[in-house]
Amino acid sequence: MVDSMVNTVRAPREDVRVVAVVVTYNREHLLPGTLAGLASGRRRPDAVVLVDNASTDGTAAFLASLDYELPLDIVSLSVNTGGAGGFAVGIDRALERHQPDLVWVMDDDTEPGVDTLAEAVDAWLAYAPVRAQRPAVVASAVQWSDGRDHPMNTMRTRFMAGQERIERAAAVGARPIRSGSFVALLMDAQVIRQNGGLPWADFFIWNDDFEFSTRLIHHREGIAVPSSVAAHHTKTFGTTDAKPGPRFYNDVRNKLWVFTRCRTLSPLEKVLYGGSSARLWLSTLLKTDEKGVYVGYLARGVRDALSAPGTNESVLEGVYPLSFPSKRYSVPAPSLDPVTSTDFSLLMSVYAKDTPEFVQRALESNLLEQSMPPSELVLVCDGPLGAELEELVSSWQAKAAAGDCPPIVRVQLPVNAGLAAALNEGLEACSYELVARADADDISEPNRFEQLIPVLVRSNVALLGSAMTETGADGVSVERVRAAITDQAELLRVLPKRNPFYHPSVAFRKSAIERVGAYEFVPGAEDWWLWCRLADAGYALANIEQPLVRYRVGAGAYTRRGGVDAWKQDWAIQRRLYTGHTISKARWVQNMAVRSVYRFVPESARRAAFGLLSSPMLSSARKES
Image 1 (tube, rainbow, N blue to C red):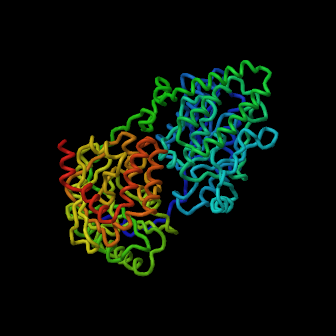
Image 2: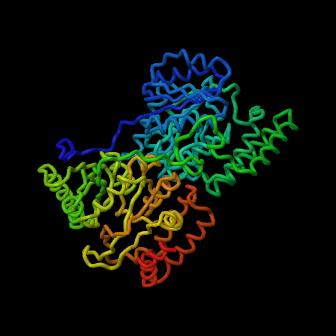
Image 3: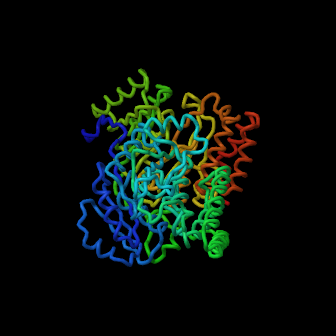
């Protein structure tokens, strides 16, 4: 046992690492102001990624001779990839080399003030006590060179935000928004990873920030903080209809891509934003004295929007090798680093409504009865536990202190934040690359970890699950065995239809989980959505056929699987899979059709259908076919 690890108690981490991303092109006269603003703030970024988009002025020479006080990572591209390509490269570089908690992006004509970053970070931290409940995006107030609010970067208050959302934002001196611009925009790196990782490089210029920010905010929150102010030194004061020139083509094409090709907006939002864009385009055509030229830009933008944007890999081929893995961008997952040790963390969450005797039995089976015990237990207390559970947890901490069980790292959350938030806080506290999951009311078979962990050590598998035995509330009486799909091709085929992994049975590689953003709240399907993102990133997923966990079903389990509430949960799950590009709209309809029948048939039929789905014979037949 390692004494320093026994009975460690941790609260959610409040220190955050901020990495700034600056994209520059032929603005040697403005770039020094941006860099000076970054370095002179009351709070400064921990590192700066600067992407030089093949500047042809004196920028390269300026950067070569620059003596800068902040850690500076300069990426010099061979061709101008536009703001969209530059930010795709810069965010990729920040995620893969600098381990940020927050990514702060801006162009080279942005000048942060003394309080810009500090006010944004403070609002983000104060919004909620745990990270998973904080905004995905924090936008600064943007002013033109003369101090007026810049109309190009004035974020609208979110349409139909609702009183609760408005009050939460107001509590930190902010207001809710639906989109933000890449002018001092602060973004949660974990949410970036959960939502595909990168902007679309093929947008080249304009609306890449609109698509990306609305993508991040779609299932989270975005806020604008008036006390965080940055200057935007554009040539003219106005919005995109102020003499846009050839960029009018990009505005038309890219917005049409957002409305027709991207899944970042709801149907109602597409109507509202589409109407606003049409009015702006009409305003541009009416104002210009080159109407024929601008009608040509408009027509070409409409024509080119009929084709989908190219993948980031194809757009940036030969320019920059992207690292963030995603099938959406045609970038495969890297091989996992070799693991030479069978040391592993066991990750469990407990909250006030858990049954103490179930928690006791779960801890006994996972810490005392294993042929290969965990190297540590990371136990997340998801809010205050109540007297009986608190006494139970304290007794196990005493066992750990006496050396009678593996070390216990207790992560104490100040409020009940939910399973996804709790597991993410716990994952950060895990000391080892290999992590096994356990629920607080299930029982692990004595050979569970001996079966799972060596397979992860000797393979390139990122996620490994097993079959489960379904028991009554006593944890002993067997109702059925939930078979596991063991053929990898079949796993990937089934994954968009239903979850082929049993969450309490899995073990995984921590680095792969964190690389795709770890858990995200999806009602009843935090695990399924995470496995989908692992598969999208190209990681190998697998099951073993032995049932290694006893899963308590208990009275009322099949009743809870039916009815309107369960159907609503299905809808939320399928919507998240669709907006995350895991399933098509047709698959969404098919999945909901099947679930709609399942949720509203009599309970006896529901029980029979679930039994058939989890039948060992059925799984075996699939494997052999």
